[in-house]
Image (cartoon, rainbow, N blue to C red; front, side, top):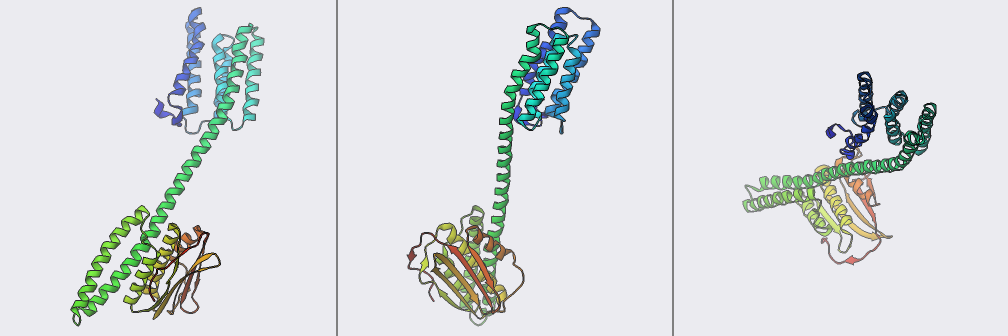
Length: 367
C-alpha cells in the first residue's frame, strides 16, 4: 500500500494515523445504532478515506478541497455521531500541509475551529465534547503549522540538492567530452603524420620507417592510457612535457619550431592541466589546418599573470569556434582567465591566467 504514495518520505505514516479514526465508531458500537445508521457511517468512512488517502496517492490532489470535504463530513455527522470530531481533527491536521504559507494555514485553522465550535454550541455539547471539537484540532493544527514549514524547507533543500547533482553530472559529461576530444584529436593527428612519413620512407629508408612505425605503436598505447585517465579526470603529464611533445609533433609535420620556455611559471595542478590541454589542442589545429611553415610557442610571467602564446604563419581562419577551441575557452574562463585569437596574419592564440603565488623553475623545452 505504501508503494502507492507519491512521497516516499512518509513511509507507512499515513496508514498508521488512520488508527485515530477509530474514535468515529465508538458511539455506534456503544449505542447499538440501527443498520441505517451503520450504513450512513460506512458511507462517511469511505468518503473520508477517499479524501484522506487522495492527499497522498493522487497525482494532482486538490488539497484544500480534500480538507473542505473533511470539514463538511464533520458538520453532517456531528448531530448523529459524537465521533464526528475526528473529521475536524483530521481537517485541522492536514490543512498546514496543503497550503503554501503559515499565514494561510493560521487563517484556515481559525475557520475550522470557528465552524466546529459553532456546530458544538448549536448542538449544546458539554465542555469535554467541545474540547474535541475545537481545543484538540486547534492544538494539533498549530503544531502541524510548524512541522509543515519545516517539511517545505526540507523539500526545497532536497530539490536543490537534486538540481546540483544533475548539474554536476552534466558538467562531468561535458568535461569528459572535451578531454576525449583533445586527447584523441591530438594523438590521432600524430599517428597520421608518422604513418604517412613511414609510408614515404618505406623504400628509401626502411630503418627510419621502422622507427616511425614503432613510435606509432608507442603513441597508440599511450593514447589508450590517456583515454582511461581522461575518464578519471587525471591525465596531464605537465606543461613542460606537453611543450616538448608539441615541439616534436610540429617538427614531425615539417614545421620550423621556436619554443621560448627556458623558464616556466610554476602553476597549481589545475591551471597547469588547462594550459597543457590548450597547447595540445592548438598544436593539433596547426598541424591539421594551418598549412604553416613556422610555429612559435611562448610562455611567460607578466603583470601577475601567466601568458601562453602560440602563433603560426599559416593561412589563418576566421570561421567560428569548433568544439576544441570552445572547450579550451570554457576551461580558461572557469579559472578567471582569457583567451584571444587573432587570425589577421596566420593564427595567434593568447591565453592569460591570473597568478597569486608565483615561483620560477628552470626547465622547459629547448629552442
